[in-house]
Image (cartoon, rainbow, N blue to C red; front, side, top):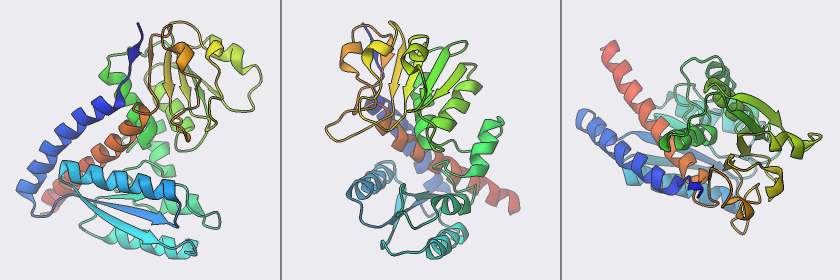
Length: 285
C-alpha cells in the first residue's frame, strides 16, 4: 500500500510548532513578526494565494502586511516599493506573488528583495548560496517538498531522482536540493526526448512541468516515490496519479500534498528571519 504524503497534516504540525516560536518572539519583542505580501494586478488565482498566506500568518500569530498595486505598475515603481519594505525595520519577510504582469521585469524585482528578507527563496543570490551548500532560504515549494519527504523518513541518498521542469523557482532549485541530499539527479522538461524511458529508470519523480497530467502513469516504475508539484483547475496535477496509487511506494495527493507545504515553508522561513533579526539586534546592542 502506497504511503500518502499528506502535506495538509504535516503543514499543521509545522504551524503548531511555529505558533510556539512566534509566541516566544512576542514575549521578547513587542511587535509580532511581519510578512509583507506584494500583489500586482487583479489575477484571481494570485489574489487567492496571497489571501491564503495571510490566513496562515494569522494562524501562527504573525502579522501580514498586504501591499496591492494596480496592473499598470511599472518595474521602477515596484522596485521602489520593494526597497521601502527592505528598509522597513518591522518587516521580516517579503513575498512578491508570481506571476507579475508581463511588462514588469520580474527577475529584477525578485533580485531586489533583501536576501535577509527573501523568505520565498526567489532571488539569484539565495539560489546560488543554496546550490553551494551555504546558508540561504530555499525556494518555498521545493524546500517544502524536502520537508515533506523528511517528515515521512524517506531515505533519499543514492536514489535516481528525475525532476520534470526547469523553472527558476521550482525545477532548478528542486534539482539542487535533491543533489545536496545525495540523489543522482536528472533534469527533464517538456521538450526532453525519450522522457518515458528516462522516467522508467527513476526512483523518485518530481512533476513540476506546469502541464496538466503531462506525465503518464505508465511512464513511472513500481515502488517509485512520486511528487506532484503541479496544480490545475479541477484539482489535477502534472502527473496522472490515479493509476499509480496502488503500485508506487509513496505519492503526494493533489490537492493536499505539495501546496500546503509551500505555505508552511514560507511561514517557517519568515519566522526564521524574525528570529535572526532579533538575534542580530541583540548583537548590535
